[in-house]
Length: 181
Image 1 (cartoon, helix red, strand yellow):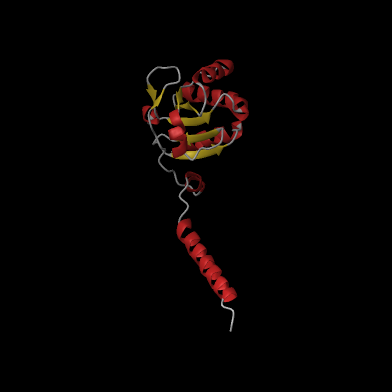
Image 2: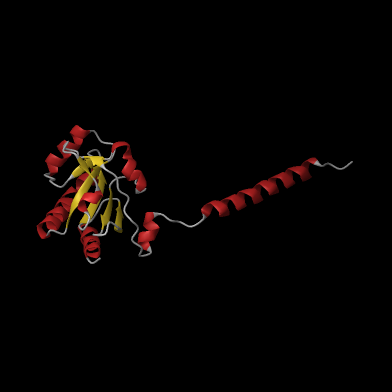
């Protein structure tokens, strides 16, 4: 009498392995993330949604700035790199508003309103800020870590993405690319 147990186990494991491989190939599909699209030179449409203004003055959305370059920055008062990049964002906002070309738009990420307002006062940030309630907009951008910044051209398309703390050099170059569109 032959033992069928080991043969049966090998057959089941082989079938499971083939199944997993097929599943992996099918699920992989095309990578359509914003990062890959921008890296390949595409300019995907920037997700937008109305968010409450942090100072309680109505709502903010990208649509309000159509025709302008927008530096959309997801931040929080508890984020140390956000603190480090605040002066870079302030300088970019000052430059964009002085020339009339655009603005920085801050979107808070899981932060208490009072702490966010204290952060703005501490760094003398006067650009518009909104509360991304439930991180709904952040999720549309694939934002899960802070800070993250999206440079949006005059047509409402993403021209550059900065995941992590921004440098002045990166932001200036990204704004220039967005202005050329």
